[in-house]
Length: 301
Image 1 (tube, rainbow, N blue to C red):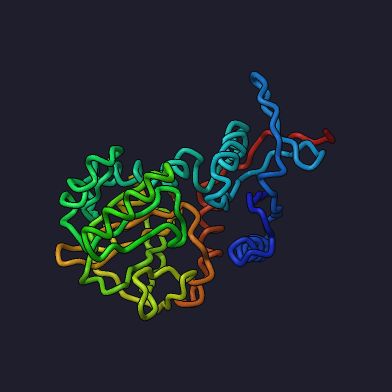
Image 2: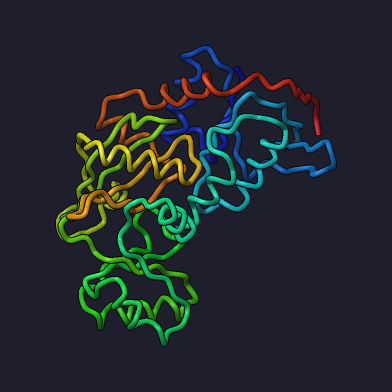
């Protein structure tokens, strides 16, 4: 099988592991920088060029598209999809996941547990927004933030009002969420592939920090999921439409609450903690679901 991985760098841990796993299983694999792709959007004959080369069709595409290039990256992925190639995660699902507000609305519609979340536009509504989520302490998040960047814990209503006002002054879109105190600075990353949670780890924030992201200095240990947590993770990934997802869950008094559904979850932390070949499981999923692509385009642009 011929597999393309859309990634900015082949040296990134996740990209490297996927290449390694694909080759170990006898597949031909190529890493393609989506920002170096350019497209001919012609009727009935869409084409993709890459560094002066007219790309062949692949049997499957693995998108590892960073948040900062979501718009162009998903446009490139759509072009691959138009050529009939199987995408591990489809462009529309990635776009849903990257829009925090839209993804929460989709999860809410499916009745999946969430922290109480508020969204508003007018500064006149900020105090009502704070009350809506139960008052301080509360969490304020940039809609475009990733890896814990743009996430602020406001410990008083006055501080919350000031932070909200500052973000709105910068014309930033934000969410305001209740703070789940009983989580004690920890969350659960559930790694979903298809209809199975293949691994899970508990991420703990470092002392003096409430964000548990490993990029923010958090630590991680393997954890056992309850049946309700496992079901919640699977339902969340399905609601967004993702075949592969990192579902972040908080353990609360009222059950598991989904914080985020990540469409391009990193492999390093989960593989090191779980000691599982998650990259190999992803390639196995592709083997089971991708069909040989009959479109073959060769040549030079």
